[in-house]
Amino acid sequence: MSLFYCCANSILLEIKEKIRKVKEYHEKLMECLGDILETHVPLPTYESTSSKRKKSVAHEFSKGLLSLSDILEILMNKILTEAHDPYVLIDHTFWPPYVELLLRHGIAVRHQENKLKIRLEKFF
Image 1: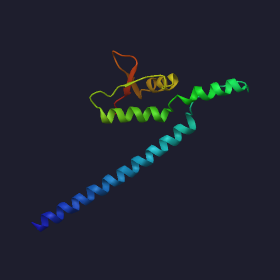
Image 2 (image 1 turned 180 degrees about the horizontal axis):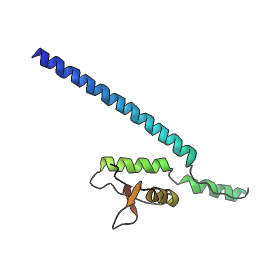
Image 3 (image 1 turned 180 degrees about the vertical axis):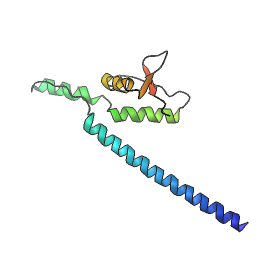
Image 4 (image 1 turned 120 degrees about the horizontal axis):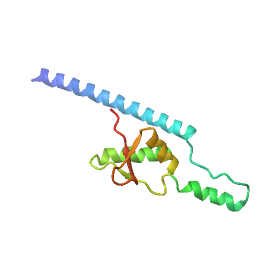
Protein backbone atom coordinates (compact mmCIF):
# COMPACT_ATOMS: atom_id res chain seq x y z
CA MET A 1 0.00 0.00 0.00
CA SER A 2 2.80 2.44 0.80
CA LEU A 3 4.49 1.80 -2.58
CA PHE A 4 1.25 2.71 -4.34
CA TYR A 5 0.87 5.82 -2.18
CA CYS A 6 4.47 6.89 -2.88
CA CYS A 7 4.09 6.36 -6.62
CA ALA A 8 0.73 8.16 -6.74
CA ASN A 9 2.12 11.02 -4.67
CA SER A 10 5.12 11.48 -6.99
CA ILE A 11 2.83 11.47 -10.04
CA LEU A 12 0.58 14.04 -8.37
CA LEU A 13 3.55 16.29 -7.57
CA GLU A 14 4.81 15.95 -11.14
CA ILE A 15 1.42 16.96 -12.54
CA LYS A 16 1.18 19.92 -10.15
CA GLU A 17 4.61 21.11 -11.28
CA LYS A 18 3.59 20.84 -14.95
CA ILE A 19 0.41 22.80 -14.26
CA ARG A 20 2.41 25.50 -12.48
CA LYS A 21 4.80 25.77 -15.43
CA VAL A 22 1.92 26.01 -17.91
CA LYS A 23 0.28 28.76 -15.84
CA GLU A 24 3.56 30.71 -15.72
CA TYR A 25 3.96 30.32 -19.48
CA HIS A 26 0.36 31.43 -20.02
CA GLU A 27 0.92 34.55 -17.91
CA LYS A 28 4.08 35.38 -19.84
CA LEU A 29 2.26 34.96 -23.18
CA MET A 30 -0.61 37.18 -22.05
CA GLU A 31 1.83 39.89 -20.92
CA CYS A 32 3.62 39.73 -24.28
CA LEU A 33 0.31 39.92 -26.15
CA GLY A 34 -0.72 42.93 -24.09
CA ASP A 35 2.60 44.67 -24.76
CA ILE A 36 2.39 44.00 -28.50
CA LEU A 37 -1.20 45.23 -28.73
CA GLU A 38 -0.44 48.32 -26.65
CA THR A 39 2.53 49.19 -28.86
CA HIS A 40 1.19 48.35 -32.31
CA VAL A 41 -2.59 48.73 -31.95
CA PRO A 42 -3.23 51.69 -29.65
CA LEU A 43 -6.64 53.13 -28.91
CA PRO A 44 -7.91 55.47 -31.63
CA THR A 45 -7.38 59.16 -31.24
CA TYR A 46 -9.37 61.96 -32.74
CA GLU A 47 -7.02 64.08 -34.86
CA SER A 48 -7.94 67.75 -34.77
CA THR A 49 -6.59 71.25 -34.50
CA SER A 50 -5.59 72.78 -31.19
CA SER A 51 -8.91 74.25 -30.11
CA LYS A 52 -10.06 73.42 -26.57
CA ARG A 53 -13.47 72.23 -27.74
CA LYS A 54 -12.02 69.71 -30.15
CA LYS A 55 -9.56 68.41 -27.53
CA SER A 56 -12.42 67.61 -25.17
CA VAL A 57 -14.22 65.85 -28.03
CA ALA A 58 -11.07 63.80 -28.69
CA HIS A 59 -10.89 62.77 -25.04
CA GLU A 60 -14.57 61.77 -25.05
CA PHE A 61 -14.11 59.90 -28.35
CA SER A 62 -11.48 57.48 -27.03
CA LYS A 63 -12.77 57.44 -23.44
CA GLY A 64 -15.67 55.08 -24.05
CA LEU A 65 -13.90 52.68 -26.41
CA LEU A 66 -12.36 49.35 -25.45
CA SER A 67 -8.80 48.55 -26.42
CA LEU A 68 -8.18 45.56 -28.66
CA SER A 69 -6.70 43.64 -25.74
CA ASP A 70 -9.87 44.32 -23.72
CA ILE A 71 -12.03 43.06 -26.59
CA LEU A 72 -9.93 39.91 -26.89
CA GLU A 73 -10.12 39.37 -23.14
CA ILE A 74 -13.92 39.69 -23.22
CA LEU A 75 -14.14 37.19 -26.07
CA MET A 76 -11.79 34.73 -24.34
CA ASN A 77 -13.61 34.95 -21.02
CA LYS A 78 -16.98 34.49 -22.71
CA ILE A 79 -15.90 31.34 -24.54
CA LEU A 80 -14.38 29.89 -21.35
CA THR A 81 -17.27 30.70 -19.03
CA GLU A 82 -20.20 30.10 -21.39
CA ALA A 83 -19.10 27.57 -23.97
CA HIS A 84 -22.74 26.87 -24.86
CA ASP A 85 -23.24 30.53 -25.91
CA PRO A 86 -19.82 32.12 -26.64
CA TYR A 87 -21.17 35.13 -28.58
CA VAL A 88 -20.63 38.69 -27.37
CA LEU A 89 -22.98 41.50 -28.35
CA ILE A 90 -21.13 44.32 -30.11
CA ASP A 91 -22.06 47.69 -28.62
CA HIS A 92 -20.80 51.29 -28.90
CA THR A 93 -17.67 50.47 -26.87
CA PHE A 94 -16.33 48.17 -29.60
CA TRP A 95 -14.49 50.33 -32.15
CA PRO A 96 -15.66 49.06 -35.60
CA PRO A 97 -12.15 48.88 -37.13
CA TYR A 98 -11.07 46.54 -34.29
CA VAL A 99 -14.07 44.29 -34.91
CA GLU A 100 -13.34 44.30 -38.64
CA LEU A 101 -9.68 43.44 -37.97
CA LEU A 102 -10.69 40.41 -35.89
CA LEU A 103 -13.22 39.27 -38.50
CA ARG A 104 -11.00 39.72 -41.56
CA HIS A 105 -8.10 37.83 -40.03
CA GLY A 106 -10.23 34.90 -38.90
CA ILE A 107 -9.80 35.56 -35.19
CA ALA A 108 -13.51 36.12 -34.65
CA VAL A 109 -16.68 35.16 -36.53
CA ARG A 110 -20.15 36.69 -36.64
CA HIS A 111 -23.28 34.96 -35.45
CA GLN A 112 -25.23 33.52 -38.39
CA GLU A 113 -28.55 35.06 -37.37
CA ASN A 114 -27.54 38.17 -35.41
CA LYS A 115 -24.80 40.20 -37.11
CA LEU A 116 -24.27 42.26 -33.95
CA LYS A 117 -22.76 39.24 -32.13
CA ILE A 118 -19.25 37.83 -32.52
CA ARG A 119 -17.24 35.02 -30.93
CA LEU A 120 -13.69 33.77 -31.10
CA GLU A 121 -12.98 31.40 -33.94
CA LYS A 122 -12.10 27.87 -32.88
CA PHE A 123 -8.40 27.22 -33.27
CA PHE A 124 -7.35 23.61 -33.61
